[in-house]
Length: 194
Length: 194
DNA sequence: TGGCCCATGTAATCTGTTACATGATTGT
DNA sequence: ACAATCATGTAACAGATTACATGGGCCA
Image (cartoon, rainbow over all chains, first blue to last red; front, side):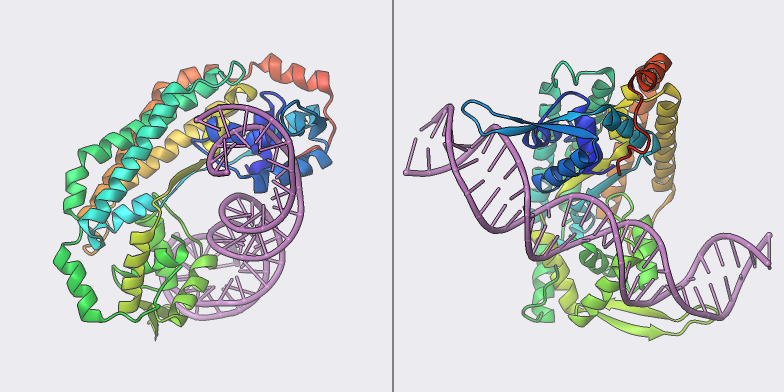
C-alpha cells in the first residue's frame, strides 16, 4: 500500500485534484498514513498513464486551474484487488518512545518538555477526531469504526502518560550525573552522529 | 533518529555484534522501531570510522567469528546529544486501518480474516510484552514505563476491535454488490496497480 | 538430508522527503 | 504589505528494504 493506492482509495469518494488529495490525507487518513506533494503528483501521473484514473483540466474563477482526477472502472477494480491482497501491517515508528526509553540519560527538564509536548499533541489529535465528521460521502460505518479506534487508542495513550508523568520525570538523569560525565570524559569536539 | 542512533542507544546497555543488535531491536525496541541487516552493518561501519564505536574481532567456539562493537565516550555523548535534539515524532503507518476504512468495498469473509488476524497479532504482542522482562541492564524505570505504555495501548486497541467485531463485519460489501460491480463494468484484464 | 540458527556483508531497488521553481488570489 | 491558501510540478537526496552471496554448526 503506497501513495498510488492511497490516491485510488481517496478517489473512490469522488473526483479530486492532487492538492485536494493532500488535504484529504491530512484530515481523513491522518491517523494511519501521510503523503507529500512530491509523491502524490508523480503517482497521479503514473496512474493516469496506466488508465486507472482519468484527468480533466478545469479552469476555476479566482483560483489557479487544476487537474481533476477521476477513478476509472479499471482503477476501482485495481484498488479493490490491492486491498484484498494487502498484508495488513501496522507499525509504529516513534522517536518519542525511544527518547522515553533513554529517559535515564536526559536531564529532568528536557524529559518533562518531551513528555508534555507529546501529551499536548495527543490532546490536539483527540480534539480533532472528536470534532471532525468528514463529508457525507466519507461518513461510512467503516470510517466511523476507524475514527473510534483512533479515539480509543490515543485516549488510552494520553491517560497512561498523564498517570505516570511524575514517575517518568523522576527517572531522569540526576543533574550531577549529567555534569560529571561531561567533565570526566572530555568528549572530542565534532563527535556527532546523524 | 535513524539506524545509527538506534545502534548507539542499544550499545549503551553493553557491547554487541551486528547480529546481536538486530535481535535486540526485535525484542526490546520492537514496539517503536525496526532495522534490518542491510542498514545495521553499514551503520556500524560508519560509526566505527567516526570513532563513536570501537570494534573487536572475537573468535567463538562452535560459532562463526563475530565483531563486538563497544560504545566509546565520544559515542555516548553524541548519542545523548542526538536524543536531546531529537524531534520526538510518533507516527503510525497502518495498512490494517486503511483496509478497515475501505471495509465497505470488501467481502465480509476477507474483512473478517483481516480483523481476526490483527486481533491475534495484538494478542501475540501483548503476551510477549507481559512475559518479556529484558536483562538486568535494560530493566530501568524508563524501560518499564515504555513497556507499560505499549501494554496499555495495545490492550485498548485489541479490546476496541473485539467489542466492535460484529459491527465491522456487518459493514462489509454485500455479496451482490461485489458480484454485480464486476459484471456491469467488465474491467480490463491486466489493470493492476503496485 | 534438510532446515534453522549463528554471522557478515554488498548491491540494486524502492519509496518517500525536502528543496526548489512559479504564480494568482484572498484575508488581515 | 504580508501571510496564507490554492495549485502543479521537478530534481536531488536520504533512508531503508530486498535480494544476493557465503559458510559452519546443530538438531531432527
